[in-house]
Image (cartoon, rainbow, N blue to C red; front, side, top):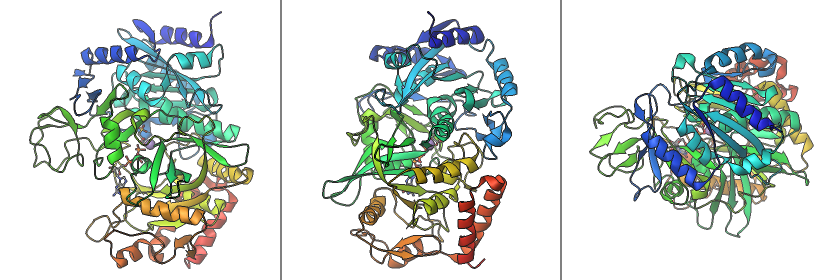
Length: 589
Ligand code: GTP
Ligand code: SPV
Ligand code: MN
Protein backbone atom coordinates (compact mmCIF):
# COMPACT_ATOMS: atom_id res chain seq x y z
CA UNK A 1 0.00 0.00 0.00
CA UNK A 2 1.21 3.48 -0.84
CA UNK A 3 0.84 5.89 2.09
CA UNK A 4 -0.56 9.41 1.59
CA UNK A 5 2.91 10.77 2.38
CA UNK A 6 4.52 8.59 -0.29
CA UNK A 7 1.82 9.66 -2.70
CA UNK A 8 2.56 13.33 -1.94
CA UNK A 9 6.26 12.78 -2.62
CA UNK A 10 5.42 11.08 -5.93
CA UNK A 11 3.11 13.95 -6.95
CA UNK A 12 5.85 16.43 -6.13
CA UNK A 13 8.37 14.50 -8.22
CA UNK A 14 5.97 14.51 -11.17
CA UNK A 15 5.36 18.25 -10.82
CA UNK A 16 8.82 19.56 -9.94
CA UNK A 17 10.90 17.02 -11.94
CA UNK A 18 13.96 16.97 -9.63
CA UNK A 19 16.96 14.81 -10.58
CA UNK A 20 16.51 12.96 -7.32
CA UNK A 21 14.47 13.05 -4.13
CA UNK A 22 15.96 12.69 -0.65
CA UNK A 23 13.83 12.17 2.44
CA UNK A 24 15.41 13.66 5.57
CA UNK A 25 15.90 11.22 8.47
CA UNK A 26 16.97 13.77 11.09
CA UNK A 27 20.24 12.01 11.97
CA UNK A 28 23.50 13.70 12.98
CA UNK A 29 25.32 12.19 9.99
CA UNK A 30 22.71 13.72 7.74
CA UNK A 31 23.34 17.22 9.12
CA UNK A 32 27.05 16.84 8.41
CA UNK A 33 26.35 15.49 4.93
CA UNK A 34 24.00 18.36 4.07
CA UNK A 35 26.47 20.96 5.35
CA UNK A 36 29.18 19.39 3.18
CA UNK A 37 26.84 19.65 0.18
CA UNK A 38 26.06 23.30 1.01
CA UNK A 39 29.77 24.11 1.27
CA UNK A 40 30.17 22.95 -2.32
CA UNK A 41 26.91 24.28 -3.82
CA UNK A 42 26.31 27.64 -5.41
CA UNK A 43 23.03 29.55 -5.65
CA UNK A 44 23.15 32.81 -7.63
CA UNK A 45 26.90 32.33 -8.00
CA UNK A 46 27.35 32.33 -4.20
CA UNK A 47 28.58 29.41 -2.11
CA UNK A 48 25.61 28.45 0.11
CA UNK A 49 27.52 27.91 3.38
CA UNK A 50 31.01 28.85 4.55
CA UNK A 51 32.55 27.55 7.75
CA UNK A 52 33.13 30.13 10.49
CA UNK A 53 35.69 30.09 13.31
CA UNK A 54 34.75 27.01 15.32
CA UNK A 55 36.74 28.09 18.38
CA UNK A 56 34.69 31.29 18.73
CA UNK A 57 31.38 30.01 17.36
CA UNK A 58 31.19 26.18 17.43
CA UNK A 59 29.39 24.42 14.55
CA UNK A 60 28.77 27.74 12.80
CA UNK A 61 28.31 28.47 9.12
CA UNK A 62 27.76 31.63 7.15
CA UNK A 63 25.13 32.19 4.49
CA UNK A 64 24.76 35.22 2.26
CA UNK A 65 21.42 35.54 0.49
CA UNK A 66 20.46 37.32 -2.70
CA UNK A 67 20.26 41.03 -1.75
CA UNK A 68 16.67 41.08 -3.06
CA UNK A 69 15.72 38.29 -0.63
CA UNK A 70 16.47 39.45 2.91
CA UNK A 71 13.08 39.73 4.66
CA UNK A 72 9.46 38.62 4.58
CA UNK A 73 7.54 40.04 1.63
CA UNK A 74 4.04 40.80 2.85
CA UNK A 75 2.85 42.20 -0.50
CA UNK A 76 3.65 38.82 -2.12
CA UNK A 77 1.94 36.77 0.61
CA UNK A 78 -1.64 35.62 -0.03
CA UNK A 79 -4.39 33.80 1.83
CA UNK A 80 -6.48 31.90 -0.70
CA UNK A 81 -9.83 31.19 0.94
CA UNK A 82 -13.00 30.46 -1.07
CA UNK A 83 -14.26 34.02 -0.45
CA UNK A 84 -12.36 37.28 -0.07
CA UNK A 85 -14.25 38.07 3.13
CA UNK A 86 -12.86 34.96 4.84
CA UNK A 87 -9.31 36.23 4.27
CA UNK A 88 -10.32 39.72 5.38
CA UNK A 89 -8.80 43.16 4.71
CA UNK A 90 -5.74 42.08 6.72
CA UNK A 91 -4.66 39.67 3.96
CA UNK A 92 -3.96 39.76 0.24
CA UNK A 93 -6.45 37.39 -1.33
CA UNK A 94 -6.51 35.32 -4.47
CA UNK A 95 -9.20 32.92 -5.62
CA UNK A 96 -7.88 29.40 -4.76
CA UNK A 97 -8.17 27.82 -8.22
CA UNK A 98 -6.50 30.79 -9.89
CA UNK A 99 -3.76 30.83 -7.23
CA UNK A 100 -3.09 27.12 -7.65
CA UNK A 101 -2.87 27.42 -11.44
CA UNK A 102 -0.44 30.28 -11.10
CA UNK A 103 1.75 28.38 -8.65
CA UNK A 104 1.56 25.09 -10.58
CA UNK A 105 2.83 27.00 -13.61
CA UNK A 106 5.80 28.27 -11.63
CA UNK A 107 6.51 24.89 -10.03
CA UNK A 108 6.35 22.84 -13.28
CA UNK A 109 9.83 21.40 -13.79
CA UNK A 110 11.29 23.95 -11.32
CA UNK A 111 13.65 21.36 -9.78
CA UNK A 112 15.17 20.07 -13.03
CA UNK A 113 18.88 19.61 -12.42
CA UNK A 114 18.30 20.00 -8.66
CA UNK A 115 17.74 17.72 -5.72
CA UNK A 116 14.39 17.69 -3.95
CA UNK A 117 14.64 17.55 -0.17
CA UNK A 118 11.58 16.00 1.45
CA UNK A 119 11.29 17.23 5.03
CA UNK A 120 8.88 15.32 7.27
CA UNK A 121 8.55 17.32 10.50
CA UNK A 122 6.49 17.75 13.64
CA UNK A 123 5.63 21.15 15.08
CA UNK A 124 5.65 20.59 18.85
CA UNK A 125 6.85 17.64 20.91
CA UNK A 126 5.77 14.51 18.99
CA UNK A 127 4.41 13.17 22.31
CA UNK A 128 2.05 16.12 22.68
CA UNK A 129 -1.57 15.93 21.60
CA UNK A 130 -1.20 19.55 20.53
CA UNK A 131 1.66 18.79 18.08
CA UNK A 132 1.01 18.73 14.33
CA UNK A 133 2.44 16.70 11.46
CA UNK A 134 3.90 18.31 8.36
CA UNK A 135 5.82 17.58 5.17
CA UNK A 136 7.65 20.21 3.16
CA UNK A 137 9.55 19.74 -0.08
CA UNK A 138 12.28 22.21 -1.07
CA UNK A 139 15.19 22.51 -3.48
CA UNK A 140 17.24 24.63 -1.05
CA UNK A 141 19.78 22.85 1.12
CA UNK A 142 19.92 26.00 3.31
CA UNK A 143 16.17 25.68 3.91
CA UNK A 144 16.51 21.94 4.62
CA UNK A 145 19.26 22.59 7.18
CA UNK A 146 17.34 25.48 8.75
CA UNK A 147 14.24 23.31 9.11
CA UNK A 148 16.32 20.74 10.98
CA UNK A 149 17.18 23.43 13.52
CA UNK A 150 13.74 24.99 13.76
CA UNK A 151 11.53 21.88 13.99
CA UNK A 152 11.60 18.14 14.76
CA UNK A 153 12.62 16.64 11.44
CA UNK A 154 12.92 13.05 10.26
CA UNK A 155 11.99 9.54 11.37
CA UNK A 156 9.91 10.61 14.38
CA UNK A 157 7.72 12.64 11.99
CA UNK A 158 7.38 9.83 9.44
CA UNK A 159 6.34 7.50 12.26
CA UNK A 160 3.83 9.99 13.65
CA UNK A 161 2.30 10.54 10.20
CA UNK A 162 2.14 6.77 9.50
CA UNK A 163 -0.63 5.98 7.03
CA UNK A 164 -2.59 9.13 7.79
CA UNK A 165 -3.43 11.76 5.20
CA UNK A 166 -3.84 14.38 7.95
CA UNK A 167 -0.62 16.37 7.58
CA UNK A 168 0.31 19.86 6.41
CA UNK A 169 1.74 19.99 2.90
CA UNK A 170 4.33 22.63 2.05
CA UNK A 171 5.70 23.06 -1.46
CA UNK A 172 8.77 25.28 -1.77
CA UNK A 173 11.18 26.12 -4.53
CA UNK A 174 13.70 28.93 -4.45
CA UNK A 175 13.13 29.21 -8.22
CA UNK A 176 15.37 31.89 -9.70
CA UNK A 177 15.04 34.23 -6.65
CA UNK A 178 13.22 36.77 -8.77
CA UNK A 179 10.86 39.09 -6.86
CA UNK A 180 8.63 39.21 -9.95
CA UNK A 181 8.12 35.47 -9.66
CA UNK A 182 7.84 35.29 -5.87
CA UNK A 183 4.63 34.24 -4.13
CA UNK A 184 3.75 32.76 -0.76
CA UNK A 185 0.27 31.27 -1.14
CA UNK A 186 -1.72 29.84 1.74
CA UNK A 187 -4.68 27.50 1.35
CA UNK A 188 -6.04 27.16 4.91
CA UNK A 189 -8.97 24.92 3.89
CA UNK A 190 -6.51 22.45 2.32
CA UNK A 191 -3.75 22.59 4.95
CA UNK A 192 -1.42 23.61 2.11
CA UNK A 193 1.18 26.31 1.39
CA UNK A 194 2.90 26.95 -1.94
CA UNK A 195 5.97 29.19 -1.79
CA UNK A 196 8.12 30.14 -4.78
CA UNK A 197 11.08 32.42 -5.42
CA UNK A 198 12.44 33.16 -1.92
CA UNK A 199 14.85 31.39 0.41
CA UNK A 200 14.25 33.78 3.33
CA UNK A 201 13.11 32.40 6.72
CA UNK A 202 9.50 33.40 7.04
CA UNK A 203 8.91 32.91 3.30
CA UNK A 204 10.66 29.57 2.96
CA UNK A 205 10.75 27.69 6.30
CA UNK A 206 7.11 26.78 5.92
CA UNK A 207 6.70 25.35 9.42
CA UNK A 208 7.24 28.80 10.88
CA UNK A 209 4.98 31.73 9.99
CA UNK A 210 3.16 29.99 7.09
CA UNK A 211 2.05 26.90 8.98
CA UNK A 212 2.39 27.62 12.70
CA UNK A 213 0.71 31.03 12.44
CA UNK A 214 -1.31 31.57 9.24
CA UNK A 215 -2.63 28.03 8.79
CA UNK A 216 -2.38 27.45 12.56
CA UNK A 217 -4.53 30.46 13.43
CA UNK A 218 -7.18 29.22 11.03
CA UNK A 219 -7.07 25.72 12.57
CA UNK A 220 -7.27 27.32 16.01
CA UNK A 221 -10.36 29.24 14.96
CA UNK A 222 -11.97 26.01 13.76
CA UNK A 223 -10.86 23.89 16.70
CA UNK A 224 -11.00 26.30 19.66
CA UNK A 225 -7.38 27.25 20.32
CA UNK A 226 -5.02 30.13 19.53
CA UNK A 227 -1.86 30.27 17.38
CA UNK A 228 0.03 33.42 18.32
CA UNK A 229 3.18 35.44 17.55
CA UNK A 230 4.31 35.09 21.15
CA UNK A 231 7.17 34.12 23.39
CA UNK A 232 6.68 31.67 26.26
CA UNK A 233 8.72 32.18 29.44
CA UNK A 234 8.76 31.04 33.04
CA UNK A 235 9.72 33.70 35.57
CA UNK A 236 11.19 32.42 38.82
CA UNK A 237 10.79 34.70 41.84
CA UNK A 238 13.11 34.88 44.87
CA UNK A 239 10.78 32.42 46.65
CA UNK A 240 11.52 29.82 43.96
CA UNK A 241 8.06 29.90 42.44
CA UNK A 242 7.80 29.93 38.61
CA UNK A 243 5.05 31.84 36.81
CA UNK A 244 4.52 31.52 33.08
CA UNK A 245 4.03 34.45 30.72
CA UNK A 246 3.26 34.91 27.05
CA UNK A 247 4.56 37.97 25.22
CA UNK A 248 3.48 39.32 21.83
CA UNK A 249 5.51 41.98 20.04
CA UNK A 250 5.63 42.67 16.29
CA UNK A 251 8.60 41.42 14.27
CA UNK A 252 11.96 42.77 15.47
CA UNK A 253 10.32 44.44 18.50
CA UNK A 254 11.90 42.50 21.35
CA UNK A 255 10.49 38.98 21.69
CA UNK A 256 13.78 37.08 21.47
CA UNK A 257 15.43 39.48 23.91
CA UNK A 258 12.63 39.10 26.46
CA UNK A 259 12.51 35.33 26.00
CA UNK A 260 16.18 34.97 26.96
CA UNK A 261 16.20 37.71 29.58
CA UNK A 262 18.84 37.69 32.30
CA UNK A 263 17.11 39.83 34.95
CA UNK A 264 19.09 42.62 36.60
CA UNK A 265 17.04 42.06 39.75
CA UNK A 266 18.54 39.68 42.29
CA UNK A 267 16.67 36.45 42.91
CA UNK A 268 14.71 36.57 39.67
CA UNK A 269 15.36 34.18 36.79
CA UNK A 270 13.77 33.74 33.38
CA UNK A 271 13.37 30.24 31.94
CA UNK A 272 13.00 30.13 28.16
CA UNK A 273 10.33 28.06 26.37
CA UNK A 274 9.88 29.95 23.11
CA UNK A 275 10.84 33.20 21.35
CA UNK A 276 8.39 33.54 18.44
CA UNK A 277 5.34 31.29 18.37
CA UNK A 278 2.91 29.92 20.96
CA UNK A 279 0.01 27.53 20.55
CA UNK A 280 -2.48 28.07 23.34
CA UNK A 281 -5.14 25.60 24.43
CA UNK A 282 -7.62 25.50 27.26
CA UNK A 283 -6.53 22.70 29.61
CA UNK A 284 -8.78 20.31 31.52
CA UNK A 285 -8.70 22.67 34.51
CA UNK A 286 -10.01 25.57 32.39
CA UNK A 287 -6.69 27.47 32.39
CA UNK A 288 -4.74 28.52 29.31
CA UNK A 289 -1.78 26.26 28.51
CA UNK A 290 0.90 27.12 25.95
CA UNK A 291 3.44 25.14 23.97
CA UNK A 292 6.14 26.41 21.64
CA UNK A 293 5.79 24.39 18.43
CA UNK A 294 9.32 25.30 17.30
CA UNK A 295 12.70 23.81 18.23
CA UNK A 296 15.03 26.70 17.44
CA UNK A 297 15.51 30.47 17.28
CA UNK A 298 15.62 32.45 14.03
CA UNK A 299 16.74 35.63 15.74
CA UNK A 300 17.68 39.19 14.79
CA UNK A 301 21.47 39.63 15.02
CA UNK A 302 21.90 43.45 15.27
CA UNK A 303 21.72 44.60 18.87
CA UNK A 304 22.56 41.14 20.28
CA UNK A 305 25.59 41.29 22.59
CA UNK A 306 26.87 40.42 26.06
CA UNK A 307 25.40 43.63 27.52
CA UNK A 308 21.96 43.36 25.96
CA UNK A 309 21.44 39.59 25.68
CA UNK A 310 24.18 37.54 27.36
CA UNK A 311 22.07 34.37 27.28
CA UNK A 312 21.77 34.50 23.48
CA UNK A 313 25.53 35.02 23.18
CA UNK A 314 26.02 31.86 25.29
CA UNK A 315 23.45 30.05 23.13
CA UNK A 316 25.35 31.01 19.95
CA UNK A 317 28.64 29.86 21.49
CA UNK A 318 27.28 26.54 22.74
CA UNK A 319 28.58 23.46 20.93
CA UNK A 320 25.64 21.13 21.64
CA UNK A 321 23.74 21.23 18.37
CA UNK A 322 25.00 21.08 14.79
CA UNK A 323 24.79 23.41 12.89
CA UNK A 324 24.24 27.09 13.80
CA UNK A 325 23.72 29.40 10.81
CA UNK A 326 24.42 33.12 10.41
CA UNK A 327 22.69 34.86 7.51
CA UNK A 328 23.62 38.27 6.08
CA UNK A 329 25.73 39.40 9.04
CA UNK A 330 29.12 40.94 8.33
CA UNK A 331 32.35 38.93 8.68
CA UNK A 332 35.32 39.98 10.80
CA UNK A 333 38.22 38.81 8.64
CA UNK A 334 40.75 39.00 11.47
CA UNK A 335 39.29 35.82 12.97
CA UNK A 336 36.55 34.63 10.57
CA UNK A 337 33.69 35.36 12.96
CA UNK A 338 30.24 36.74 12.20
CA UNK A 339 29.90 40.41 13.16
CA UNK A 340 27.07 42.88 13.67
CA UNK A 341 26.52 46.13 15.49
CA UNK A 342 26.27 45.53 19.23
CA UNK A 343 28.26 42.28 19.36
CA UNK A 344 31.43 44.20 20.26
CA UNK A 345 32.12 47.76 21.38
CA UNK A 346 34.59 48.45 18.58
CA UNK A 347 33.95 48.05 14.87
CA UNK A 348 36.67 45.63 13.63
CA UNK A 349 39.20 47.03 11.16
CA UNK A 350 38.84 44.36 8.49
CA UNK A 351 35.16 43.71 7.87
CA UNK A 352 33.40 42.23 4.87
CA UNK A 353 29.84 43.52 4.64
CA UNK A 354 26.73 41.39 4.12
CA UNK A 355 26.99 41.78 0.36
CA UNK A 356 30.59 40.55 0.25
CA UNK A 357 32.29 43.96 -0.13
CA UNK A 358 35.06 45.39 2.03
CA UNK A 359 33.31 47.55 4.65
CA UNK A 360 34.13 51.24 4.78
CA UNK A 361 34.10 52.36 8.42
CA UNK A 362 32.87 55.82 7.36
CA UNK A 363 29.85 54.40 5.59
CA UNK A 364 26.47 55.54 6.92
CA UNK A 365 25.12 52.01 6.33
CA UNK A 366 25.74 49.13 8.72
CA UNK A 367 28.10 46.31 7.70
CA UNK A 368 25.43 43.70 8.42
CA UNK A 369 21.94 43.75 6.94
CA UNK A 370 19.51 45.23 9.52
CA UNK A 371 17.53 42.00 9.28
CA UNK A 372 20.55 39.70 9.47
CA UNK A 373 19.75 36.66 11.60
CA UNK A 374 21.07 33.56 13.28
CA UNK A 375 19.44 30.13 13.24
CA UNK A 376 20.26 28.17 16.38
CA UNK A 377 18.78 25.19 18.24
CA UNK A 378 16.71 25.90 21.36
CA UNK A 379 18.64 23.04 23.02
CA UNK A 380 21.73 25.30 22.92
CA UNK A 381 19.99 27.75 25.24
CA UNK A 382 21.41 27.62 28.80
CA UNK A 383 18.14 28.95 30.25
CA UNK A 384 15.92 26.38 28.48
CA UNK A 385 13.02 25.57 30.81
CA UNK A 386 12.70 22.01 32.09
CA UNK A 387 9.05 22.34 31.01
CA UNK A 388 9.89 23.09 27.35
CA UNK A 389 9.14 19.53 26.28
CA UNK A 390 6.13 19.10 28.58
CA UNK A 391 3.47 17.69 26.21
CA UNK A 392 0.73 19.55 28.10
CA UNK A 393 2.42 22.93 27.86
CA UNK A 394 2.64 25.39 30.76
CA UNK A 395 -0.20 27.24 32.56
CA UNK A 396 -0.22 30.94 31.76
CA UNK A 397 -0.50 33.64 34.47
CA UNK A 398 0.08 36.75 32.36
CA UNK A 399 0.10 37.96 28.76
CA UNK A 400 2.34 40.87 27.78
CA UNK A 401 1.58 42.81 24.62
CA UNK A 402 3.85 45.46 23.18
CA UNK A 403 4.87 47.56 20.24
CA UNK A 404 7.68 49.82 19.12
CA UNK A 405 6.57 53.41 19.66
CA UNK A 406 8.68 56.52 20.16
CA UNK A 407 5.68 58.34 21.67
CA UNK A 408 2.12 57.97 23.03
CA UNK A 409 2.25 54.44 24.48
CA UNK A 410 3.33 54.30 28.15
CA UNK A 411 6.06 52.01 29.48
CA UNK A 412 3.51 49.70 31.10
CA UNK A 413 -0.16 49.44 32.00
CA UNK A 414 -2.62 46.71 32.81
CA UNK A 415 -6.02 45.88 31.36
CA UNK A 416 -8.94 45.61 33.77
CA UNK A 417 -10.03 42.18 32.58
CA UNK A 418 -9.86 39.78 29.62
CA UNK A 419 -12.25 41.67 27.32
CA UNK A 420 -10.63 45.06 27.87
CA UNK A 421 -7.28 43.30 27.40
CA UNK A 422 -8.46 41.99 24.04
CA UNK A 423 -9.42 45.57 23.17
CA UNK A 424 -6.03 46.88 24.31
CA UNK A 425 -4.24 44.28 22.16
CA UNK A 426 -6.54 44.95 19.19
CA UNK A 427 -5.45 48.60 19.05
CA UNK A 428 -1.66 48.01 19.16
CA UNK A 429 0.25 50.24 16.80
CA UNK A 430 3.91 49.67 16.00
CA UNK A 431 6.64 51.10 13.80
CA UNK A 432 7.49 48.83 10.87
CA UNK A 433 10.93 47.15 10.99
CA UNK A 434 13.44 45.55 8.63
CA UNK A 435 11.92 42.10 9.30
CA UNK A 436 9.53 42.83 6.45
CA UNK A 437 10.37 44.41 3.08
CA UNK A 438 9.21 47.99 2.60
CA UNK A 439 9.60 51.21 4.56
CA UNK A 440 10.89 51.08 8.11
CA UNK A 441 9.49 53.27 10.91
CA UNK A 442 5.88 53.73 9.74
CA UNK A 443 3.33 53.34 12.52
CA UNK A 444 0.71 50.79 11.57
CA UNK A 445 -2.01 48.94 13.50
CA UNK A 446 -0.86 45.46 14.40
CA UNK A 447 -3.47 43.74 16.62
CA UNK A 448 -1.87 41.13 18.91
CA UNK A 449 1.32 41.56 16.74
CA UNK A 450 -0.52 39.26 14.32
CA UNK A 451 -1.37 41.57 11.39
CA UNK A 452 0.99 39.80 8.94
CA UNK A 453 0.25 36.34 10.36
CA UNK A 454 -3.48 35.98 10.90
CA UNK A 455 -4.66 33.49 8.27
CA UNK A 456 -8.30 34.64 8.26
CA UNK A 457 -10.44 37.73 8.75
CA UNK A 458 -9.04 39.68 11.70
CA UNK A 459 -12.56 40.66 12.80
CA UNK A 460 -13.39 36.96 13.25
CA UNK A 461 -10.03 36.53 14.95
CA UNK A 462 -10.83 39.20 17.56
CA UNK A 463 -14.21 37.56 18.19
CA UNK A 464 -12.37 34.24 18.66
CA UNK A 465 -10.18 35.89 21.34
CA UNK A 466 -13.30 37.09 23.16
CA UNK A 467 -14.84 33.62 22.87
CA UNK A 468 -11.73 31.98 24.34
CA UNK A 469 -12.17 34.26 27.34
CA UNK A 470 -15.74 33.05 27.79
CA UNK A 471 -14.71 29.39 27.52
CA UNK A 472 -11.76 29.49 29.93
CA UNK A 473 -12.39 29.24 33.68
CA UNK A 474 -9.31 31.08 34.88
CA UNK A 475 -7.75 33.79 32.76
CA UNK A 476 -4.31 35.40 32.82
CA UNK A 477 -3.87 39.10 33.44
CA UNK A 478 -3.17 41.18 30.34
CA UNK A 479 -0.47 43.88 30.23
CA UNK A 480 0.69 46.38 27.62
CA UNK A 481 4.31 47.59 27.43
CA UNK A 482 6.48 49.88 25.29
CA UNK A 483 10.26 49.64 25.70
CA UNK A 484 10.89 52.06 22.85
CA UNK A 485 9.82 55.56 24.03
CA UNK A 486 12.25 58.25 22.90
CA UNK A 487 13.09 61.72 24.23
CA UNK A 488 13.58 65.03 22.37
CA UNK A 489 17.12 63.92 21.45
CA UNK A 490 15.89 60.70 19.87
CA UNK A 491 17.36 58.64 22.72
CA UNK A 492 15.54 55.70 24.33
CA UNK A 493 14.09 56.87 27.66
CA UNK A 494 13.92 53.39 29.20
CA UNK A 495 17.12 51.27 29.39
CA UNK A 496 15.23 48.19 28.20
CA UNK A 497 16.70 44.71 27.78
CA UNK A 498 17.79 43.27 31.17
CA UNK A 499 16.09 46.15 33.02
CA UNK A 500 12.75 45.00 31.59
CA UNK A 501 12.81 42.49 34.47
CA UNK A 502 11.75 45.42 36.70
CA UNK A 503 8.47 45.63 34.81
CA UNK A 504 7.96 41.86 34.93
CA UNK A 505 8.47 41.96 38.69
CA UNK A 506 5.67 44.54 38.95
CA UNK A 507 3.42 42.29 36.87
CA UNK A 508 4.08 39.37 39.23
CA UNK A 509 3.29 41.62 42.20
CA UNK A 510 0.00 42.49 40.48
CA UNK A 511 -0.85 38.85 39.77
CA UNK A 512 -0.12 38.01 43.40
CA UNK A 513 -2.20 40.96 44.57
CA UNK A 514 0.74 42.58 46.37
CA UNK A 515 0.33 46.06 44.90
CA UNK A 516 -2.53 48.30 43.86
CA UNK A 517 -3.17 50.36 40.74
CA UNK A 518 -4.09 53.86 39.63
CA UNK A 519 -6.88 54.02 37.10
CA UNK A 520 -6.48 56.05 33.89
CA UNK A 521 -8.34 56.57 30.60
CA UNK A 522 -6.59 53.62 28.95
CA UNK A 523 -6.01 51.17 31.78
CA UNK A 524 -4.48 50.54 35.19
CA UNK A 525 -1.11 52.07 36.13
CA UNK A 526 1.51 51.26 38.78
CA UNK A 527 1.21 53.14 42.06
CA UNK A 528 4.04 55.53 42.97
CA UNK A 529 7.31 53.67 43.57
CA UNK A 530 5.72 50.30 42.80
CA UNK A 531 8.29 49.58 40.07
CA UNK A 532 11.58 48.41 41.59
CA UNK A 533 14.21 50.86 40.30
CA UNK A 534 16.95 49.82 42.74
CA UNK A 535 20.41 50.29 41.26
CA UNK A 536 19.05 52.11 38.23
CA UNK A 537 19.97 55.68 37.48
CA UNK A 538 16.79 57.10 35.99
CA UNK A 539 15.27 60.50 36.72
CA UNK A 540 11.94 60.72 38.50
CA UNK A 541 10.61 63.00 35.77
CA UNK A 542 11.63 60.45 33.09
CA UNK A 543 9.60 57.79 34.90
CA UNK A 544 6.69 60.22 35.14
CA UNK A 545 6.83 60.85 31.39
CA UNK A 546 7.08 57.13 30.69
CA UNK A 547 3.96 56.44 32.74
CA UNK A 548 1.80 59.32 31.61
CA UNK A 549 -1.25 59.28 29.36
CA UNK A 550 -0.93 62.25 27.00
CA UNK A 551 -4.51 62.97 26.02
CA UNK A 552 -3.61 64.92 22.89
CA UNK A 553 -1.39 62.08 21.62
CA UNK A 554 -4.13 59.57 22.42
CA UNK A 555 -6.72 61.57 20.49
CA UNK A 556 -4.51 61.18 17.42
CA UNK A 557 -4.12 57.51 18.23
CA UNK A 558 -7.88 57.02 18.35
CA UNK A 559 -8.20 58.44 14.82
CA UNK A 560 -5.83 55.74 13.54
CA UNK A 561 -7.66 53.04 15.52
CA UNK A 562 -11.02 54.10 14.08
CA UNK A 563 -9.62 54.07 10.58
CA UNK A 564 -8.31 50.53 11.11
CA UNK A 565 -11.52 49.25 12.70
CA UNK A 566 -13.63 50.75 9.92
CA UNK A 567 -11.90 48.60 7.29
CA UNK A 568 -13.50 45.58 8.94
CA UNK A 569 -17.03 46.97 9.29
CA UNK A 570 -19.35 44.77 11.34
CA UNK A 571 -16.71 42.08 11.62
CA UNK A 572 -15.17 43.98 14.55
CA UNK A 573 -17.01 42.58 17.59
CA UNK A 574 -19.63 44.87 19.13
CA UNK A 575 -17.84 44.72 22.53
CA UNK A 576 -14.64 46.12 21.04
CA UNK A 577 -16.43 48.92 19.24
CA UNK A 578 -18.08 49.78 22.56
CA UNK A 579 -14.67 49.95 24.26
CA UNK A 580 -13.54 52.38 21.56
CA UNK A 581 -16.61 54.58 22.05
CA UNK A 582 -15.93 54.53 25.77
CA UNK A 583 -12.26 55.48 25.28
CA UNK A 584 -13.27 58.42 23.09
CA UNK A 585 -15.65 59.60 25.79
CA UNK A 586 -12.91 59.39 28.44
CA UNK A 587 -10.60 61.43 26.23
CA UNK A 588 -13.32 64.01 25.72
CA UNK A 589 -13.71 63.31 21.99
P1 GTP B 1 11.15 38.56 15.25
O1 GTP B 1 12.16 37.45 15.31
O2 GTP B 1 11.25 39.37 13.99
O3 GTP B 1 9.74 38.11 15.47
O4 GTP B 1 11.57 39.66 16.33
P2 GTP B 1 11.67 39.75 17.93
O5 GTP B 1 10.42 40.34 18.45
O6 GTP B 1 12.11 38.46 18.49
O7 GTP B 1 12.79 40.87 18.10
P3 GTP B 1 14.16 40.90 18.88
O8 GTP B 1 14.06 40.53 20.32
O9 GTP B 1 15.15 40.11 18.11
O10 GTP B 1 14.54 42.45 18.85
C1 GTP B 1 14.67 43.18 17.68
C2 GTP B 1 15.49 44.41 17.91
O11 GTP B 1 14.98 45.18 19.01
C3 GTP B 1 16.94 44.11 18.20
O12 GTP B 1 17.77 44.95 17.47
C4 GTP B 1 17.05 44.38 19.69
O13 GTP B 1 18.34 44.76 20.03
C5 GTP B 1 16.00 45.47 19.94
N1 GTP B 1 15.44 45.40 21.31
C6 GTP B 1 14.95 44.31 21.94
N2 GTP B 1 14.55 44.60 23.21
C7 GTP B 1 14.80 45.92 23.38
C8 GTP B 1 14.60 46.82 24.48
O14 GTP B 1 14.13 46.46 25.56
N3 GTP B 1 14.96 48.12 24.29
C9 GTP B 1 15.49 48.54 23.10
N4 GTP B 1 15.82 49.82 22.99
N5 GTP B 1 15.69 47.71 22.04
C10 GTP B 1 15.36 46.43 22.19
C1 SPV C 1 9.39 37.72 11.97
O1 SPV C 1 9.54 38.40 10.94
O2 SPV C 1 8.47 37.93 12.79
C2 SPV C 1 10.34 36.62 12.28
C3 SPV C 1 11.27 36.20 11.24
O3 SPV C 1 10.27 36.05 13.35
S1 SPV C 1 10.43 35.21 10.06
O4 SPV C 1 10.63 33.82 10.39
O5 SPV C 1 11.04 35.52 8.78
O6 SPV C 1 9.04 35.51 10.06
MN1 MN D 1 8.49 36.66 14.47
